[in-house]
Length: 504
Image (cartoon, rainbow, N blue to C red):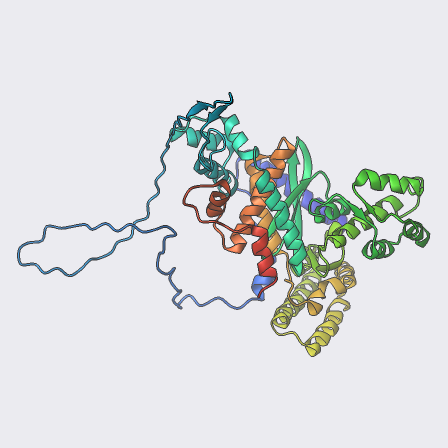
Protein backbone atom coordinates (compact mmCIF):
# COMPACT_ATOMS: atom_id res chain seq x y z
CA UNK A 1 0.00 0.00 0.00
CA UNK A 2 2.88 2.32 0.72
CA UNK A 3 4.41 1.56 -2.68
CA UNK A 4 1.08 2.27 -4.39
CA UNK A 5 0.79 5.58 -2.54
CA UNK A 6 4.30 6.52 -3.68
CA UNK A 7 3.46 5.70 -7.30
CA UNK A 8 0.27 7.76 -7.07
CA UNK A 9 2.24 10.72 -5.82
CA UNK A 10 4.74 10.30 -8.67
CA UNK A 11 1.92 10.28 -11.22
CA UNK A 12 0.44 13.44 -9.69
CA UNK A 13 3.81 15.22 -9.93
CA UNK A 14 4.31 14.08 -13.54
CA UNK A 15 0.84 15.26 -14.53
CA UNK A 16 1.47 18.63 -12.91
CA UNK A 17 4.76 18.98 -14.82
CA UNK A 18 3.08 18.05 -18.11
CA UNK A 19 0.32 20.58 -17.45
CA UNK A 20 2.91 23.25 -16.69
CA UNK A 21 4.82 22.56 -19.91
CA UNK A 22 1.58 22.70 -21.90
CA UNK A 23 0.54 25.92 -20.21
CA UNK A 24 -2.57 24.36 -18.70
CA UNK A 25 -4.24 25.25 -15.44
CA UNK A 26 -2.47 23.67 -12.46
CA UNK A 27 -3.98 21.52 -9.69
CA UNK A 28 -6.05 23.22 -6.99
CA UNK A 29 -4.29 24.57 -3.93
CA UNK A 30 -4.97 22.43 -0.86
CA UNK A 31 -5.31 24.57 2.26
CA UNK A 32 -3.52 23.60 5.53
CA UNK A 33 -5.38 22.01 8.40
CA UNK A 34 -6.43 25.33 9.96
CA UNK A 35 -6.61 23.80 13.43
CA UNK A 36 -5.82 27.06 15.21
CA UNK A 37 -8.53 28.96 13.33
CA UNK A 38 -11.06 26.14 13.82
CA UNK A 39 -10.66 26.28 17.60
CA UNK A 40 -10.91 30.06 17.84
CA UNK A 41 -14.02 32.13 18.50
CA UNK A 42 -16.52 32.25 15.67
CA UNK A 43 -16.41 35.24 13.39
CA UNK A 44 -19.32 37.69 13.43
CA UNK A 45 -22.17 36.86 11.06
CA UNK A 46 -22.47 38.39 7.65
CA UNK A 47 -25.48 40.43 8.75
CA UNK A 48 -23.59 41.98 11.64
CA UNK A 49 -22.09 45.35 10.83
CA UNK A 50 -18.33 45.44 11.04
CA UNK A 51 -16.68 48.41 12.74
CA UNK A 52 -15.16 51.02 10.47
CA UNK A 53 -11.50 51.84 10.26
CA UNK A 54 -11.91 54.94 12.42
CA UNK A 55 -10.85 58.50 11.89
CA UNK A 56 -7.79 59.08 9.71
CA UNK A 57 -5.02 60.57 11.85
CA UNK A 58 -1.84 61.38 9.88
CA UNK A 59 1.49 60.83 11.64
CA UNK A 60 2.76 64.23 10.44
CA UNK A 61 1.81 67.79 11.29
CA UNK A 62 -1.31 69.03 9.51
CA UNK A 63 -1.20 72.24 7.48
CA UNK A 64 -4.43 74.24 7.37
CA UNK A 65 -5.36 76.03 4.16
CA UNK A 66 -8.50 78.11 3.79
CA UNK A 67 -10.33 77.80 0.47
CA UNK A 68 -12.59 80.69 -0.32
CA UNK A 69 -15.65 80.76 -2.50
CA UNK A 70 -17.37 83.76 -4.13
CA UNK A 71 -20.70 83.76 -2.28
CA UNK A 72 -23.54 85.97 -3.53
CA UNK A 73 -24.51 89.06 -1.60
CA UNK A 74 -26.66 88.41 1.45
CA UNK A 75 -25.15 84.97 2.20
CA UNK A 76 -24.39 84.02 5.81
CA UNK A 77 -21.03 82.49 6.82
CA UNK A 78 -21.50 79.05 8.46
CA UNK A 79 -17.93 78.09 9.29
CA UNK A 80 -15.74 75.57 7.45
CA UNK A 81 -16.14 72.07 6.11
CA UNK A 82 -12.89 70.13 6.54
CA UNK A 83 -11.49 67.83 3.86
CA UNK A 84 -8.28 65.94 4.64
CA UNK A 85 -5.78 65.27 1.83
CA UNK A 86 -2.51 63.40 2.40
CA UNK A 87 0.31 64.03 -0.06
CA UNK A 88 3.78 62.65 -0.65
CA UNK A 89 6.51 65.03 -1.78
CA UNK A 90 9.32 63.18 -3.53
CA UNK A 91 12.01 65.48 -4.88
CA UNK A 92 15.76 65.49 -5.33
CA UNK A 93 17.77 68.19 -3.63
CA UNK A 94 21.49 68.61 -4.32
CA UNK A 95 23.63 70.79 -2.05
CA UNK A 96 27.13 71.93 -2.87
CA UNK A 97 28.90 72.82 0.35
CA UNK A 98 31.59 75.46 -0.01
CA UNK A 99 33.83 74.62 2.91
CA UNK A 100 36.14 77.35 4.09
CA UNK A 101 39.82 76.54 4.19
CA UNK A 102 42.26 78.38 6.41
CA UNK A 103 45.97 78.01 6.93
CA UNK A 104 46.79 78.55 10.58
CA UNK A 105 49.89 80.47 11.69
CA UNK A 106 51.43 77.15 12.71
CA UNK A 107 51.11 75.74 9.19
CA UNK A 108 48.24 73.13 9.22
CA UNK A 109 45.15 73.70 7.06
CA UNK A 110 41.70 73.94 8.62
CA UNK A 111 38.57 72.95 6.67
CA UNK A 112 35.03 73.70 7.83
CA UNK A 113 33.31 70.48 9.00
CA UNK A 114 30.28 69.03 7.25
CA UNK A 115 26.86 69.25 8.96
CA UNK A 116 25.74 66.47 11.28
CA UNK A 117 24.37 63.43 9.46
CA UNK A 118 26.45 63.92 6.32
CA UNK A 119 28.56 60.81 5.81
CA UNK A 120 29.56 60.55 2.18
CA UNK A 121 28.13 62.09 -0.98
CA UNK A 122 24.58 60.96 -0.28
CA UNK A 123 22.50 62.54 2.46
CA UNK A 124 20.78 60.73 5.36
CA UNK A 125 17.31 61.05 3.85
CA UNK A 126 18.47 59.35 0.65
CA UNK A 127 20.21 56.61 2.64
CA UNK A 128 17.04 56.08 4.67
CA UNK A 129 14.94 55.82 1.51
CA UNK A 130 17.31 53.25 0.00
CA UNK A 131 17.31 51.06 3.14
CA UNK A 132 13.54 51.34 3.51
CA UNK A 133 12.76 50.44 -0.09
CA UNK A 134 15.21 47.55 -0.29
CA UNK A 135 14.53 45.82 3.04
CA UNK A 136 10.96 46.67 4.00
CA UNK A 137 9.75 47.41 0.47
CA UNK A 138 11.44 44.19 -0.78
CA UNK A 139 12.69 45.93 -3.92
CA UNK A 140 15.58 44.68 -6.04
CA UNK A 141 18.86 46.47 -6.58
CA UNK A 142 18.32 47.21 -10.30
CA UNK A 143 14.74 48.45 -9.73
CA UNK A 144 15.79 50.63 -6.83
CA UNK A 145 18.61 52.10 -8.91
CA UNK A 146 16.21 52.78 -11.80
CA UNK A 147 13.74 54.45 -9.44
CA UNK A 148 16.38 56.78 -8.01
CA UNK A 149 17.72 57.66 -11.43
CA UNK A 150 14.21 58.33 -12.77
CA UNK A 151 13.54 60.97 -10.09
CA UNK A 152 16.84 62.70 -10.81
CA UNK A 153 19.47 61.17 -8.50
CA UNK A 154 22.83 60.63 -10.17
CA UNK A 155 23.75 57.23 -8.76
CA UNK A 156 24.96 53.88 -10.04
CA UNK A 157 23.99 50.37 -9.02
CA UNK A 158 27.37 49.92 -7.36
CA UNK A 159 26.82 53.06 -5.26
CA UNK A 160 23.40 51.80 -4.18
CA UNK A 161 25.05 48.53 -3.16
CA UNK A 162 27.52 50.47 -1.02
CA UNK A 163 24.68 52.35 0.67
CA UNK A 164 23.12 49.00 1.59
CA UNK A 165 26.24 47.34 3.02
CA UNK A 166 28.98 49.82 3.89
CA UNK A 167 29.17 51.78 7.17
CA UNK A 168 26.37 49.76 8.75
CA UNK A 169 28.30 48.63 11.83
CA UNK A 170 25.89 50.48 14.13
CA UNK A 171 22.89 48.59 12.75
CA UNK A 172 24.71 45.26 12.95
CA UNK A 173 25.65 45.89 16.57
CA UNK A 174 22.09 46.88 17.47
CA UNK A 175 20.70 43.75 15.81
CA UNK A 176 23.12 41.64 17.86
CA UNK A 177 22.13 43.49 21.04
CA UNK A 178 18.45 42.93 20.20
CA UNK A 179 19.09 39.19 20.24
CA UNK A 180 20.98 39.43 23.52
CA UNK A 181 18.22 41.43 25.16
CA UNK A 182 15.57 39.04 23.89
CA UNK A 183 17.41 35.93 25.09
CA UNK A 184 18.13 37.48 28.48
CA UNK A 185 14.60 38.69 29.30
CA UNK A 186 12.12 36.52 27.38
CA UNK A 187 10.21 33.68 29.07
CA UNK A 188 10.06 31.88 25.72
CA UNK A 189 11.41 32.07 22.19
CA UNK A 190 10.01 30.56 19.01
CA UNK A 191 12.43 29.29 16.36
CA UNK A 192 12.27 28.20 12.73
CA UNK A 193 14.53 27.97 9.70
CA UNK A 194 14.33 28.12 5.93
CA UNK A 195 16.65 27.70 2.98
CA UNK A 196 19.04 30.51 2.00
CA UNK A 197 21.63 30.98 -0.74
CA UNK A 198 25.00 32.50 0.08
CA UNK A 199 28.09 32.60 -2.12
CA UNK A 200 26.34 30.38 -4.70
CA UNK A 201 25.84 27.61 -2.11
CA UNK A 202 22.78 26.40 -0.26
CA UNK A 203 22.54 27.43 3.38
CA UNK A 204 19.93 27.97 6.05
CA UNK A 205 18.49 31.05 7.73
CA UNK A 206 17.44 30.57 11.36
CA UNK A 207 14.79 32.78 12.96
CA UNK A 208 14.76 33.42 16.72
CA UNK A 209 12.10 35.63 18.27
CA UNK A 210 8.82 36.08 20.10
CA UNK A 211 6.21 38.81 20.45
CA UNK A 212 8.89 41.42 21.26
CA UNK A 213 11.80 40.83 18.90
CA UNK A 214 12.97 39.01 15.78
CA UNK A 215 16.47 38.03 14.75
CA UNK A 216 17.79 36.23 11.66
CA UNK A 217 21.07 34.43 11.15
CA UNK A 218 22.20 32.70 7.92
CA UNK A 219 24.80 29.93 8.14
CA UNK A 220 25.92 26.99 5.94
CA UNK A 221 24.43 24.42 8.34
CA UNK A 222 21.34 23.98 10.48
CA UNK A 223 22.82 21.50 12.93
CA UNK A 224 22.42 21.70 16.69
CA UNK A 225 25.99 22.99 16.91
CA UNK A 226 25.04 25.85 14.61
CA UNK A 227 21.89 26.63 16.61
CA UNK A 228 23.79 26.69 19.90
CA UNK A 229 26.40 28.95 18.32
CA UNK A 230 23.66 31.38 17.22
CA UNK A 231 22.22 31.41 20.74
CA UNK A 232 25.52 32.78 22.04
CA UNK A 233 24.56 36.04 20.29
CA UNK A 234 28.00 36.95 19.05
CA UNK A 235 30.08 35.64 21.95
CA UNK A 236 32.87 33.25 21.00
CA UNK A 237 33.75 31.61 24.32
CA UNK A 238 33.27 27.99 25.45
CA UNK A 239 32.43 27.46 29.13
CA UNK A 240 32.40 24.36 31.32
CA UNK A 241 29.90 24.82 34.15
CA UNK A 242 27.01 22.95 35.75
CA UNK A 243 24.77 23.61 32.74
CA UNK A 244 27.43 22.26 30.37
CA UNK A 245 27.95 19.05 32.35
CA UNK A 246 24.18 18.53 32.72
CA UNK A 247 23.85 18.84 28.94
CA UNK A 248 26.61 16.27 28.39
CA UNK A 249 24.96 13.81 30.77
CA UNK A 250 21.62 14.32 29.03
CA UNK A 251 23.27 13.49 25.66
CA UNK A 252 24.80 10.24 27.01
CA UNK A 253 28.44 11.33 27.07
CA UNK A 254 30.32 8.68 29.11
CA UNK A 255 30.76 9.61 32.77
CA UNK A 256 34.53 8.98 32.57
CA UNK A 257 34.90 11.65 29.87
CA UNK A 258 32.78 14.12 31.83
CA UNK A 259 34.96 13.49 34.89
CA UNK A 260 38.07 14.05 32.76
CA UNK A 261 36.74 17.47 31.72
CA UNK A 262 35.62 18.38 35.25
CA UNK A 263 39.03 17.53 36.70
CA UNK A 264 40.77 20.24 34.69
CA UNK A 265 41.26 23.65 36.35
CA UNK A 266 40.48 25.62 33.18
CA UNK A 267 36.76 26.12 32.63
CA UNK A 268 36.57 28.99 30.10
CA UNK A 269 38.08 29.14 26.61
CA UNK A 270 38.17 32.25 24.45
CA UNK A 271 37.47 30.70 21.06
CA UNK A 272 37.09 27.47 19.12
CA UNK A 273 40.83 27.07 18.59
CA UNK A 274 41.51 27.13 22.34
CA UNK A 275 38.65 24.72 23.01
CA UNK A 276 39.75 22.29 20.29
CA UNK A 277 43.31 22.31 21.64
CA UNK A 278 41.96 21.52 25.10
CA UNK A 279 40.00 18.52 23.78
CA UNK A 280 43.08 17.30 21.91
CA UNK A 281 45.15 17.42 25.11
CA UNK A 282 42.53 15.29 26.86
CA UNK A 283 42.48 12.73 24.04
CA UNK A 284 38.91 13.32 22.88
CA UNK A 285 39.83 13.56 19.19
CA UNK A 286 41.24 10.03 19.10
CA UNK A 287 38.10 8.38 20.46
CA UNK A 288 35.84 6.62 17.96
CA UNK A 289 32.70 5.92 19.95
CA UNK A 290 29.03 6.77 19.77
CA UNK A 291 27.96 9.45 20.48
CA UNK A 292 30.87 11.48 19.13
CA UNK A 293 32.60 12.80 22.28
CA UNK A 294 34.00 15.89 20.53
CA UNK A 295 30.57 16.94 19.25
CA UNK A 296 28.72 16.32 22.53
CA UNK A 297 31.43 18.05 24.58
CA UNK A 298 31.42 21.01 22.19
CA UNK A 299 27.63 21.30 22.33
CA UNK A 300 27.81 21.17 26.13
CA UNK A 301 30.46 23.91 26.26
CA UNK A 302 28.32 26.07 23.96
CA UNK A 303 25.30 25.51 26.22
CA UNK A 304 27.49 26.45 29.17
CA UNK A 305 28.49 29.67 27.41
CA UNK A 306 24.82 30.50 26.78
CA UNK A 307 24.06 30.12 30.49
CA UNK A 308 27.21 31.99 31.49
CA UNK A 309 25.90 35.04 29.61
CA UNK A 310 22.47 34.72 31.28
CA UNK A 311 20.69 33.69 28.10
CA UNK A 312 17.70 31.31 28.16
CA UNK A 313 18.10 30.71 31.90
CA UNK A 314 14.44 29.77 32.42
CA UNK A 315 13.11 30.26 28.90
CA UNK A 316 11.22 27.71 26.80
CA UNK A 317 12.32 27.02 23.22
CA UNK A 318 9.25 26.47 21.02
CA UNK A 319 9.81 24.69 17.69
CA UNK A 320 8.19 22.56 15.00
CA UNK A 321 9.96 19.35 16.16
CA UNK A 322 13.11 19.88 14.10
CA UNK A 323 15.84 17.95 15.94
CA UNK A 324 18.39 20.76 16.16
CA UNK A 325 16.05 22.89 18.28
CA UNK A 326 15.53 20.29 21.03
CA UNK A 327 17.57 21.92 23.80
CA UNK A 328 16.81 23.09 27.33
CA UNK A 329 13.14 23.41 28.13
CA UNK A 330 11.65 22.48 24.80
CA UNK A 331 8.03 22.75 23.66
CA UNK A 332 6.42 21.56 20.44
CA UNK A 333 3.97 23.23 18.07
CA UNK A 334 0.51 21.65 18.15
CA UNK A 335 -0.33 22.77 14.61
CA UNK A 336 2.65 20.86 13.23
CA UNK A 337 1.74 17.82 15.34
CA UNK A 338 -1.84 17.77 14.04
CA UNK A 339 -0.58 18.32 10.50
CA UNK A 340 1.05 14.87 10.62
CA UNK A 341 -2.38 13.34 11.14
CA UNK A 342 -3.93 15.62 8.53
CA UNK A 343 -1.39 14.63 5.84
CA UNK A 344 -1.49 10.92 6.57
CA UNK A 345 -2.25 8.81 3.49
CA UNK A 346 -5.51 6.87 3.82
CA UNK A 347 -6.66 4.00 1.58
CA UNK A 348 -10.11 2.89 2.78
CA UNK A 349 -13.23 4.43 4.21
CA UNK A 350 -12.36 2.94 7.61
CA UNK A 351 -8.96 4.64 7.48
CA UNK A 352 -10.49 7.98 6.58
CA UNK A 353 -13.11 7.68 9.31
CA UNK A 354 -10.42 6.89 11.91
CA UNK A 355 -8.33 9.83 10.71
CA UNK A 356 -11.22 12.29 10.96
CA UNK A 357 -12.20 10.98 14.38
CA UNK A 358 -8.67 11.47 15.75
CA UNK A 359 -8.41 14.92 14.18
CA UNK A 360 -11.65 15.95 15.86
CA UNK A 361 -10.40 14.71 19.23
CA UNK A 362 -7.15 16.66 18.77
CA UNK A 363 -9.03 19.81 17.74
CA UNK A 364 -11.24 19.64 20.82
CA UNK A 365 -8.23 19.00 23.05
CA UNK A 366 -6.40 21.95 21.46
CA UNK A 367 -9.37 24.23 22.11
CA UNK A 368 -9.36 23.21 25.78
CA UNK A 369 -5.62 23.90 25.98
CA UNK A 370 -6.31 27.43 24.75
CA UNK A 371 -8.96 27.80 27.46
CA UNK A 372 -6.51 26.49 30.07
CA UNK A 373 -3.92 29.11 29.09
CA UNK A 374 -6.35 31.90 29.99
CA UNK A 375 -7.24 30.34 33.39
CA UNK A 376 -4.70 27.69 34.51
CA UNK A 377 -5.52 25.46 37.46
CA UNK A 378 -4.16 22.30 39.07
CA UNK A 379 -7.39 20.42 38.46
CA UNK A 380 -7.46 21.38 34.79
CA UNK A 381 -3.81 20.41 34.38
CA UNK A 382 -4.37 16.89 35.76
CA UNK A 383 -7.51 16.40 33.68
CA UNK A 384 -5.75 17.45 30.46
CA UNK A 385 -2.82 15.12 31.10
CA UNK A 386 -5.14 12.14 31.56
CA UNK A 387 -7.13 13.12 28.49
CA UNK A 388 -3.93 13.34 26.43
CA UNK A 389 -3.16 9.72 27.31
CA UNK A 390 -6.64 8.57 26.32
CA UNK A 391 -6.37 10.24 22.89
CA UNK A 392 -2.86 9.17 21.90
CA UNK A 393 -2.87 5.68 23.38
CA UNK A 394 -6.04 4.48 21.71
CA UNK A 395 -6.09 1.87 18.97
CA UNK A 396 -7.84 2.85 15.75
CA UNK A 397 -7.37 -0.26 13.65
CA UNK A 398 -5.29 1.81 11.20
CA UNK A 399 -1.72 0.62 11.83
CA UNK A 400 0.02 3.67 10.36
CA UNK A 401 -2.16 6.05 12.38
CA UNK A 402 -1.56 4.00 15.54
CA UNK A 403 2.20 4.28 15.05
CA UNK A 404 1.87 8.03 14.52
CA UNK A 405 -0.19 8.41 17.69
CA UNK A 406 2.44 6.45 19.63
CA UNK A 407 5.12 8.76 18.27
CA UNK A 408 3.16 11.84 19.32
CA UNK A 409 2.56 10.33 22.76
CA UNK A 410 6.31 9.97 23.17
CA UNK A 411 6.47 13.78 22.88
CA UNK A 412 3.97 14.24 25.71
CA UNK A 413 6.25 16.39 27.90
CA UNK A 414 7.01 18.79 25.06
CA UNK A 415 3.44 18.99 23.74
CA UNK A 416 2.08 19.63 27.24
CA UNK A 417 4.76 22.11 28.29
CA UNK A 418 2.00 24.73 28.21
CA UNK A 419 0.43 23.13 31.29
CA UNK A 420 3.49 24.13 33.32
CA UNK A 421 4.20 27.33 31.39
CA UNK A 422 0.84 28.75 30.25
CA UNK A 423 2.51 31.93 28.96
CA UNK A 424 4.00 30.13 25.95
CA UNK A 425 2.02 29.83 22.67
CA UNK A 426 0.65 26.56 21.38
CA UNK A 427 2.07 27.03 17.89
CA UNK A 428 4.96 28.53 15.94
CA UNK A 429 2.81 30.74 13.72
CA UNK A 430 4.79 33.77 14.89
CA UNK A 431 8.05 32.31 13.61
CA UNK A 432 6.49 31.33 10.30
CA UNK A 433 5.08 34.83 9.86
CA UNK A 434 8.46 36.37 10.70
CA UNK A 435 10.47 34.17 8.37
CA UNK A 436 8.12 34.85 5.47
CA UNK A 437 9.88 38.17 4.79
CA UNK A 438 13.15 36.29 4.43
CA UNK A 439 11.54 33.85 2.00
CA UNK A 440 10.25 36.80 -0.03
CA UNK A 441 13.71 38.36 -0.04
CA UNK A 442 15.16 35.06 -1.25
CA UNK A 443 12.65 34.82 -4.10
CA UNK A 444 13.21 38.44 -5.12
CA UNK A 445 17.00 38.58 -4.95
CA UNK A 446 18.16 34.93 -4.78
CA UNK A 447 21.24 34.93 -2.50
CA UNK A 448 24.05 37.10 -1.18
CA UNK A 449 27.64 37.19 -2.36
CA UNK A 450 29.58 38.59 0.60
CA UNK A 451 29.46 37.94 4.33
CA UNK A 452 28.81 41.64 4.91
CA UNK A 453 25.85 41.61 2.52
CA UNK A 454 24.44 38.51 4.23
CA UNK A 455 24.79 40.06 7.69
CA UNK A 456 23.24 43.37 6.60
CA UNK A 457 20.27 41.62 5.00
CA UNK A 458 19.63 39.54 8.12
CA UNK A 459 20.12 42.51 10.44
CA UNK A 460 17.78 44.91 8.65
CA UNK A 461 15.05 42.31 8.18
CA UNK A 462 15.22 41.51 11.87
CA UNK A 463 15.29 45.16 12.92
CA UNK A 464 12.26 45.90 10.75
CA UNK A 465 10.26 43.08 12.33
CA UNK A 466 11.39 44.13 15.82
CA UNK A 467 10.30 47.73 15.21
CA UNK A 468 6.86 46.53 14.13
CA UNK A 469 6.49 44.44 17.30
CA UNK A 470 7.57 47.35 19.51
CA UNK A 471 5.21 49.80 17.82
CA UNK A 472 8.04 51.83 16.22
CA UNK A 473 7.81 52.95 12.59
CA UNK A 474 10.81 51.59 10.68
CA UNK A 475 11.01 54.88 8.77
CA UNK A 476 11.36 56.81 12.04
CA UNK A 477 13.88 54.30 13.36
CA UNK A 478 16.12 54.67 10.30
CA UNK A 479 15.83 58.45 10.43
CA UNK A 480 16.84 58.51 14.09
CA UNK A 481 19.88 56.30 13.54
CA UNK A 482 21.03 58.09 10.38
CA UNK A 483 20.77 61.56 11.90
CA UNK A 484 17.97 62.96 9.74
CA UNK A 485 17.16 66.53 10.80
CA UNK A 486 13.92 67.14 12.72
CA UNK A 487 13.53 63.40 13.31
CA UNK A 488 12.35 62.38 16.78
CA UNK A 489 14.78 60.25 18.73
CA UNK A 490 14.07 56.52 18.91
CA UNK A 491 15.52 54.83 22.02
CA UNK A 492 17.76 51.79 21.52
CA UNK A 493 15.65 48.77 20.66
CA UNK A 494 17.39 46.46 23.19
CA UNK A 495 16.34 48.86 25.95
CA UNK A 496 12.72 48.78 24.78
CA UNK A 497 12.81 44.98 24.75
CA UNK A 498 14.18 44.85 28.29
CA UNK A 499 11.46 47.27 29.45
CA UNK A 500 8.81 45.00 27.95
CA UNK A 501 10.41 42.03 29.70
CA UNK A 502 10.51 43.72 33.12
CA UNK A 503 7.38 45.83 33.47
CA UNK A 504 7.31 48.33 36.33
